[in-house]
Image (cartoon, rainbow, N blue to C red; front, side):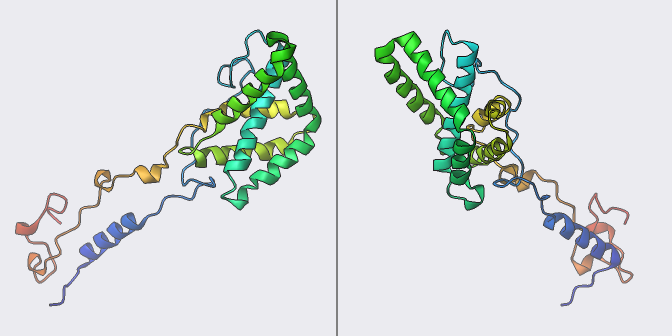
Amino acid sequence: MAYRFGKARAAALVAAGVLALAAPQAASAQMFLTQPDFAKGPIEGSDPLVGLPIPGATPDEYRAHMLWNLRAGLNVAALQCQFSPFMRAVDNYNAILGHHAKELASAYTTMTGYFKRVRGAKEGQKAFDDYTTSTYNNFSTLQAQYGFCQTATAIAKEALTRPKGELYLTAQQHMRELRSSLVPFTDRIAAYNPYLIPAPTLPPLDPACYDRKDRLKKKCATPAYAGK
């Protein structure tokens, strides 16, 4: 039996099809359909969020601490984010080491000097090595890998645009974001529940519900289509 569809029913079906097939807008994010909203904003080297505590540090030592944590985070990203060649994680990290070599070398000297000052010449180097190892481990992530890699990639690219001697500004502006990206992010599209999304009400499709003039019979009328 062939079904007859009047203009009202055809229009409703087309509208329903448009709503059902509508795709989410394309996002600028590399790894996600919706951009992760990681906490951003400047941060000081003395903020506990930056890394392991270094009590009694001077302003210069806190600055070196900030740089050393940024370098460690980007180093971990170079190891963990090679699954996507478009991120160029290794190439960008190596380029940062070359471009900002003098500033990073100064941070290394300052940090080893801090640990020798507070732990003594004999134990200072070992304390710094332990600090560095723990810093690496604190950036390692599996569940939050995509968000971390995307964030680290953007930070690395920005770092390469900084003039020599200004890598600290990148660390100051983005360390909060880099740390925040270690928290797993679930893409919003994956959290959609189709049963919670209002769907358009379709008119009755049974031909027996329509008269010869294609008008809906009262016995078949639903609240959405009553009187149509």
